[in-house]
Amino acid sequence: MTTEQRTALITGANRGLGRAVAAELLARGLRIVVTARDEAEAAATARELGPEVRWAALDVTDQQSVDAARKAIGPVDILVSNAGVLLDSGSDPLSVSLDLVRQTFSVNLLGSWRVAQAFVPDMVRRRWGRVVLVSSGTGSFSHGLFAGSPGYSVSKTAVNGLTQLLAGQTKDYGVLVNAVNPGPTRTRMMPGAQRTAEEAARDVADAATLPDGGPTGTFRRGEQVFDW
Image (cartoon, rainbow, N blue to C red; front, side, top):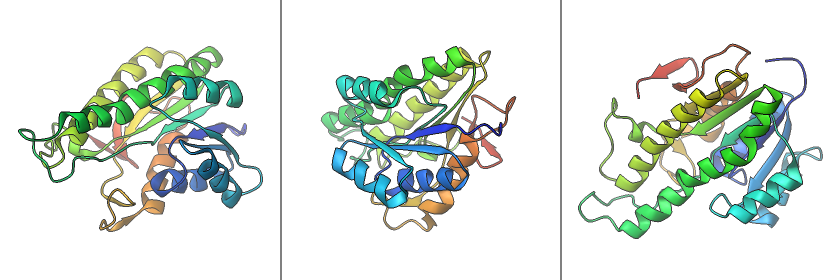
């Protein structure tokens, strides 16, 4: 990546993987903006990470909140779309509550899309940017969609589709858009996982700091590229 200091915005950065990504990118010398639905949590996280870290309230399901955050933050160079929910674990496609599915899509897909529409056009205009969408192997056809959390799995399939659309739209403007499969990661969403948030964060940070001319439109973890 260019030696110019860049600004990275991370959604859902108040805990878990998002917070770990913010810490990792800060350690790599980037300016950081942490966001969360709860303003106090975003502010507390920023204070914990360091005095130079900025923060903003941003609810990815609320257009007014996203617009207000965009106005307050201004253009960013890197967007890590990490905010997500897993609401239907232990269900199945024939009985899952479609209200839970709707809520899941509202955050995981439409939230990512809404934030991309707010921040990626600036990257296109400035002809430089990196976008990382946090996805999951449960949403990959090659891996096999996981029926035990059907709404979550299909939402991540849709996130993978969004990755392809954004990458195709921005590929001629110096903007790289990739999805990262962090694997099962020990967070509040998956407390029994073996992989730590700090380990997974390195893979997200790698995708967020790809060099000019690097890959775009891929589904990856570190240097490993997965089939969709």
